[in-house]
Length: 217
Image (tube, rainbow, N blue to C red; front, side, top):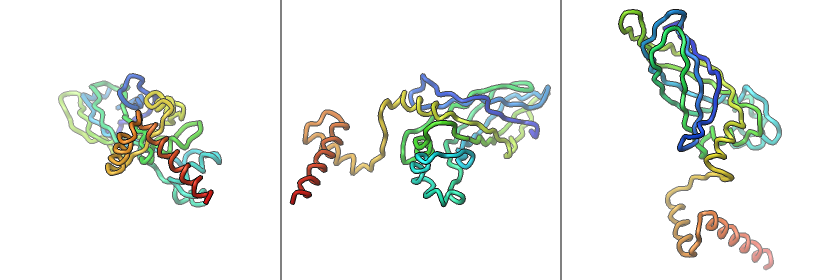
């Protein structure tokens, strides 16, 4: 369907989702009077970091992704946010649909680390579409969605932060290998600590005491 066009009219966080979830509102146009029986879409969402400016604090926090600012002309490349699928019911001419995108707060994931580095403003996103259209006035005609179909979107940083604060209020997140988790669990059990926060605080306090003792020798 060469006339198929996509645009993003807005993005919001789903307040009722079990985990952090963004909802992109898509407008899909097939042409005046064109009947589409169904669309099976695949969407790749990626961040386009070169399409916005960054303050000194943001640039410092983005070093882990892009290196020193002097290297940015060659190192600031698109970052994948997600890949999701969507089935759009039949329509004639034009319709709107919600694209639901689960997100992660894993700081080892480049997209999460990118959003965490931003102080405010908007993050430029690009939605790339492919898939299959079932169209035609008299029965199904199976046609591929052209690979060049895309839509731009600007995600407010506030939406991302509020979404993460809803699910992880006042918290961060780190991923540890199983051996480290087992060692932490053993330490927590041995010392009768009531939470992971207390476990980490005890380890930090022990490390600080060891440094202080070493400085006195």
